[in-house]
Image (cartoon, rainbow, N blue to C red):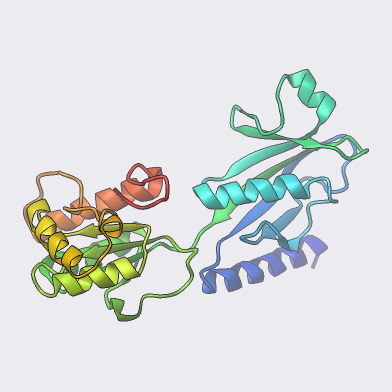
Length: 265
């Protein structure tokens, strides 16, 4: 077994452990080098949520700051990134500054005396997002069946919402008249990134008044999207569930439903 094969095995084991713990991480692979560099193409590393290299090797300290910054970006956006760690004089020749992205490549400065260039591809691995569903209504049941097909981990028993806060979490209140107020309070307490209510806006406004009278903060209630789902003319429970999944997909992939603090509008 070659050293590369041993390293790959170690990376795989470490990645499996992190996935089991719902921990975000990233794989980094050197895809190209030019000039004098310690690490060569094919070198790999597994990087933790704080940008620390957990397994593998990417060379000396010249790459670490740039790799860490790029890893934190990929874990935030969920998108892979190709970075080119390049000597400053070569960046000047190219007419780019550190941090500039050109044709899909983000440039960073290599300040090491070796003056080599290292291109690193960083691919994030994020925990499966969690969909918490309050209620046993037909819409709730249809949504629980549909969501796993879109790579959502469904929690249909939200009595004890907890776990790793690095996981994306959306909460859907689909109680439809059966314990609406209690479910809305519990949903707010979970502080999800996305929170929606299945029901008309008029119904939600009526519930909102009752919650305010019970001391629930109005700013917290403003986080709730009502009615849940995109307006596709849905009528049946299955169609409503589809509209909700479409909205969740839009939020997850493009972030178009979020305030600056990441809470749904």
